[in-house]
Length: 304
Length: 298
Image 1 (tube, helix red, strand yellow):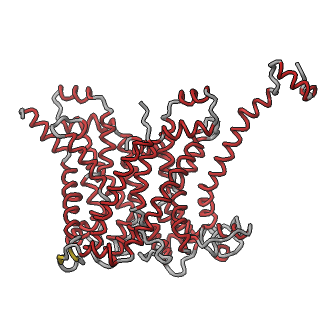
Image 2 (cartoon, one colour):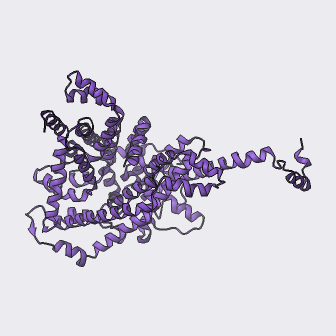
């Protein structure tokens, strides 16, 4: 075996002419395996900084003192960890009240969406009836209408019903179906073997029985996705509460956070602490439901 | 119709009855009502007062904020959305590399921003991009680079909003990732055999084969540009001014202002219908031209 030290340019050229491998095994490995991996890891890490640094800065700022936040150049780590900022965040604005309000609305919406979307999805997939697929296209077509078109007359209707400054405008529509979730659930229901339904029908079961006792239990992952996305949309919603909730005792967290931002003398460190608390439920939820989350997004994108 | 078919029909209709109710109450009635309102002047307190096409003509001739809001929205749509697609795809490609270690960790990291409620992330970015105390301008100052005014500067406000949207690119990226994972590896192997370099493979295998995903993300992104609201409202100081200097007065914000601030329901309804037409035209255009650049795997 030729040692690397014996390799002069002339011997390398001579070897090349005779078709022998002229690059050391380690050099090959470096070029083929180590270098691409290192480059990719570095790029991914650099891009990762863009996504993670704001989060880091959010948390760091939330523990700083007020003079530290207005200092230039700023400190990186807080000089002392002011956990009282978090206490301030839940007292300066009625954070817990807003959190309770938000949860009330979320639960109302989740229940509504589950009820009003599973039944139609079942009807569009597990029951054969004339005109079914045409009407399903109609369901899809309604997704093309921008919310602004329906927003104004709905506001008028809700005003005439004296539903302003109540949660009804936020929750009631959830009980009337949602084209996107109906679509999602229908696609899922279609993957359940029809033989299961047929066998139950032969045994004399009613359609509602089959729905409740056979199909729904098998659809728990899809139901979880619907619940998850309903929660996410409602928890973070800003426009609908803004339109209907003038009474600040009824505000949701989105409105509360916006309200504090607009307040004179709002302190950045407390504001950041509030933002952390506001985001925390979403992050916790994500870590418990990662697969459902990613699957839901993927389904919506690929089937869309 | 046989008795059995009729029974099936009744069953089917009963199952979809929540949707039928919703369709009538939340789609058909409001769509009709808003079309009617758009031909009236209506402030909710009184009754609608018929004005014919006056709202539409005022929008197109006598209201400078209308073309302004369209121009601002067009900027977000035609600069922001392509950027979003690019960043989403690049991030997905990076995460899809076979040689990458700790893939799950990075994917979670890239996705984390989308978990932040939009109000919170807007507040965070207002802080980070604060021209006086924000970390970004502080860092730029340290390396003697120019320090833009970001949200406070009319020329930088929209790019800053785009930057915020790029931070939350996780959803687009996840959809792209799923699309990437659906690409048959044999196609890459065939390209390898032909001696294709990495760039060549990306341009001629990856991008064409995720084009259906690109189409979806493109349509969704364009429609989204017309619906962006929360960041614009918050950055403009919890109001509809679209400040600084109207640079953030996008279509959805101006529509909201007309409806809920000026209580001009008729005028806002006219804007809503124009919006519908614009989105229809855009969607049709994109779908038509997509024939030239999308490839569906046989």
